[in-house]
Image (cartoon, rainbow, N blue to C red; front, side):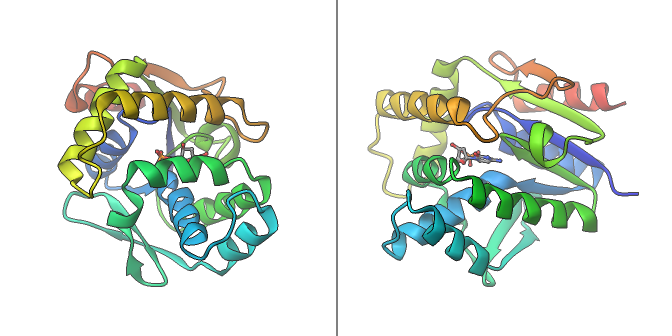
Length: 222
Ligand code: DC
C-alpha cells in the first residue's frame, strides 16, 4: 500500500531539503508541490497572461504536462512537457508569482489532482502548504515545519546566492520583506491557507540543522 507523509510550512522552514532527505531515507518519491505552483506562474508570466486572470491561468494549468524525475540529490525535479524547468522556477521572483497564482481556487484544484495522481503511483513525501489539510487529509503522518522569519530569510538569502541566477544582488532585507509578504498572502487566502493540520506534528527548525530535523521526523514516524 502506498504511504503519504506530508510536510507543510512557510518558505525557508527547511521543507525542501528535509523532504528530499526523508524521501531518500524511506525510498519514497519526494513531491515538491511548490514547484508546480511556480511552474504555472512562470508559464503564465512568459505567455503574458495576468496572474489574476483565473480562467486564463486555469487553461494554461490544464494544458501543462507535468512529469517527475529524481535527480542525483534525490530531489524530484518537475518536468513540463519533458523539459527540466528547475533553474527557471528557483528564483525569488518565481516564488512571489507562485504565491499569487496560489490564491486561485480552480488552479489549486488542478494541482491537487496532480499531487494525488503521483501519490496513487508511489509512496510520497509531499511538501507544500495544504498537503496535510486539503490534498491528503488522511495522510499516514503529517508534519508542519516552522522557523523564526529572520532565520528563514537568512536561509533563503543564502540559497539564492548559491543558485546565482542573477539574484545574488538581492539583499537579506529584500528577501525578508518578500518573505513576510508571502507569509501574509499564503496564511490569509480564503482557499487552503498555509497552516498546520489539526493532527500535524509541529517542529520549530530555527535551531536545528537539516539532519537533526530529518532524525526527528524519522523518530516520530517510527
Ligand atoms: O514552497 P515554495 O516556496 O516553492 O512555494 C511557492 C509559493 O507557492 C508559496 O508562496 C505558496 C504557494 N504554494 C501553495 O500555495 N501551496 C502549495 N502546496 C505549495 C506552494
